[in-house]
Image 1 (cartoon, helix red, strand yellow):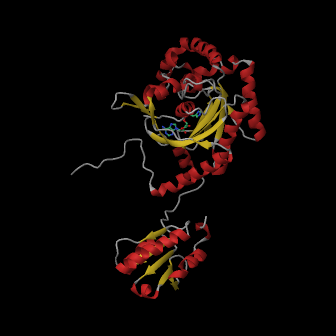
Image 2 (cartoon, protein in one colour; image 1 turned 180 degrees about the horizontal axis):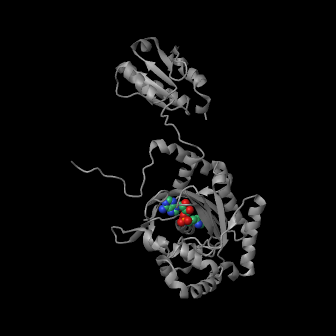
Image 3 (tube, helix red, strand yellow; image 1 turned 135 degrees about the horizontal axis):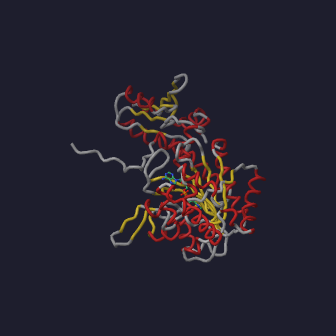
Length: 430
Ligand code: HAM
C-alpha cells in the first residue's frame, strides 16, 4: 500500500468548519483598515534572501535559524518571507511610494518561520500588518497603537489582552547601553542560561527578554535602557504614553521589551494574552526610522505592527464568535429526471441572479426523491425547490420549507423568486 502524503509539519489546512471564523476576522480587518484610511498592498511570498538579512538582522533568531531559504534554478538565494515589513519597504521604494510622502499601508498573508511547532506557533502562519511611513512624531505611533486597540474592541477581545510598551531609543543610545549591559553581565556569564551566554557575544539586548528565571533574577540589578536615552528620545516616548492615556488605553511600560527584529528604534510594543500558554504575543510592532535608508532609500520615518492571525482565531474560538455551525446552503434544488435536471439548472441560475445573497445548491448525481431530500436536509438549507415532470409540464415548482413547520407550496415558476425573497430568513439578506 502506498503511504498517504500529509501536510508538512507546522503547516495547517484551514478546513471549511474553521474558515467562517477566518472570514469574520478578515472582514473586521478590512473594515478597520478602511475606517482608518489605510490602503492594501500585496507583495510576493518569496524575496531575495538579502532583503531579510539586511533588515531583520543577521544575529536574530529569524535570520540565523528560522528562514526557509533555497537556491532557485538559477542558483540565486531566495527566501519564503518570514515577516511583512521588509517586503513592504522594498516594494514601497521600488515603486516610489515612500519618498517625501505619507503612506498608510496594510497587508495580510502567509509568513514562514522554521520554528518548533506548538499551540499558537507554526511554520506557515498568517499575519495582518500595517505600516505607516512619512511621519516621525509620536502621534503616528499612537495612531497605529489605537488602531490595534480598536481591533480588539471590534472583535470582543479587549478584556482578554493587554499592552506592553517600551522605548529602545536611537542606535547610538542603544550602543552605549549594550556596552554597559555587557560589562554588567560578563562577570556573571557562567550563571546565564546557554542561549543568553551565546547572546552575550551576538545580540546582548535579547538577553533582557529571556524566559529563563535565573537569568531574569541576574538582570534585577542590571543597568536600564531608559537611563541611556537622551531627553529628546524620552520626550518622544512620553508623548506616546500621554496619547494612550488620553485615549483611555491602559498599558504597562516593560523596560525589558526589546523585540526580536533588529530594525526598531524608539517605541516598541506588544499586545499579549494569558490565554494561549507559551505563545502569549498576539501582536508586535514599533517604530523603525532607519530601515528604508538601510535598504537603499532616503531617510523615511516609519512605524507599524503585525498580528498573528492563528493566535487571534484561537482567542476568538475561546471567547468571542464561538463555533460556527457549517451551513452549506440556503436553497437546495431537487430535480427528478433528466428533463427536470436541465430546467433546474436554469432555474437555479435565475435564483442566483435575483437573490445574490442566497447560496443555491444544485443537487447533482440524480437519484430518488428520498435520497435527494436527505441531502437537502443535511445541507441545512431553509428551502428545497423540487422539480419533476409534472411540474415542468405545468411550469410550476414545489417549494418545501425544511426548517420550522414543514409546509409545502406549489407555485408558478415565475413566482419563485418573489416567494423566496419574502420567505428567506432576514439574516441571509446581508
Ligand atoms: P513579530 O513579533 O515577529 O513582528 O511577529 C508579529 C506577530 O506574528 C507575533 O506577535 C505573533 O502573534 C505572530 N507570529 C510570529 N511568529 C509566529 C509563528 N511561528 N506562528 C504563529 N504566529 C506567529 C513582525 O513580524 C514585524 N514585522 C512586525 C512589525 C510590522 N513591526 C513593524 N511593522
